[in-house]
Image (cartoon, rainbow over all chains, first blue to last red; front, top):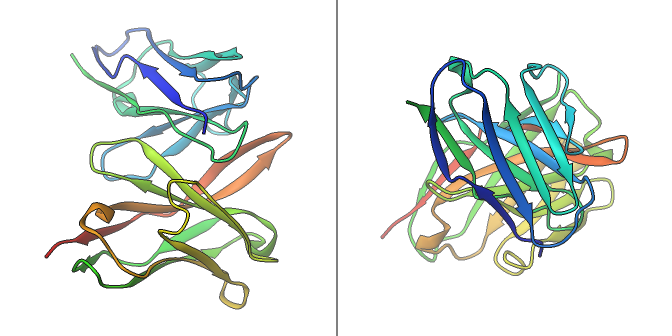
Length: 107
Length: 121
C-alpha cells in the first residue's frame, strides 16, 4: 500500500490567515492526489482532485499544488467555516489510502 | 441529486454478526464503484474496499480482506458491509461513498452520513 503522511498534524490560525498543509506519499503518485475536509459529525467532503483542480462548488480561496511525492493545500484567507480537519488521499493505486489529517483550529 | 443514505447506529457484543447498508439514489448505481471507508475515533479515514454493483466485482484493502464482506443488491440500489464476528476493535464510524471518475481522476464525490458501530461486552 502507498503510505500518506501530512504535516503539521494540527495548527492554530486566525480568520484571514494564509494556511498551508503538506502531504507526502511513500512513492510517486504523479498528480493522483485528492484533498477532503471534514467537520465534526460530518462525512468528509471533496475539495480538490488531480492535485490542483478545485471541485465544483468549492471556494476559490482553496488551492492545491504538487506532483510526484510532495503536495500542498493552501487556504489563501481562512474563513470561519474552514476550521476543520483536512485529509489528502492518493488515487494512484488500490487501496486509495488517506493521510492522517491536519486539524485546523482557531487561534 | 446523488444521495447515499446509511442505516442507523448499531451497538453489538463481540462475536456477533452485523450488516449495515447504504441505500443510493439519483445516479446509476449499477455502473459506479461504491467504496466503504472506516474512521476510527480521532483518526483519518481508511479505505476498506470497493464494489462494482453491475457484476459484483469487489476489491478489498489487504487490511480488511477476510475481515468483512462487501455486497450489493442492484434491485434496491443498496450496498452492504457485513461482519460475521465483530471485535471490540471494529468500533468505528463507517461511511459509504460513490467513486466517480472526473477525466482520469478517481474521487469519492458523494458520501453517506455514516453509521456508528459500537462493539462492547
